[in-house]
View 1 (cartoon, rainbow, N blue to C red):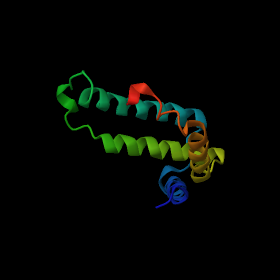
View 2: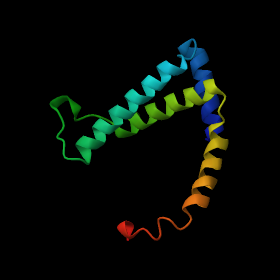
View 3: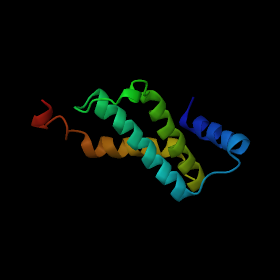
View 4: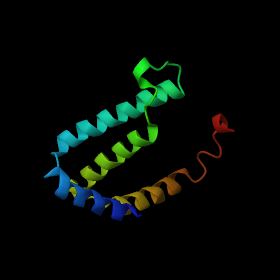
Length: 108
């Protein structure tokens, strides 16, 4: 599945099940909420914070998928081709960081 395919699948799902897209500000708030849920899982799994009794079944992959879904919603409603944007972003990073990380003494 390509990113372009994913954008179409989300659009079809919204039209069939969601009635319409939430507005952009609502989706931004939802994206922030989903990132926070992922952060909570990572803090408990890899960080120093212990899980609460009801948090044992938290699923990192599901939270990542929630983030992707809302991000795709935002892309669709703002006319952003995420596949093209991602390709361009990789080119930018490659040009900017071609040697930057290789000479970072903190990473060696």
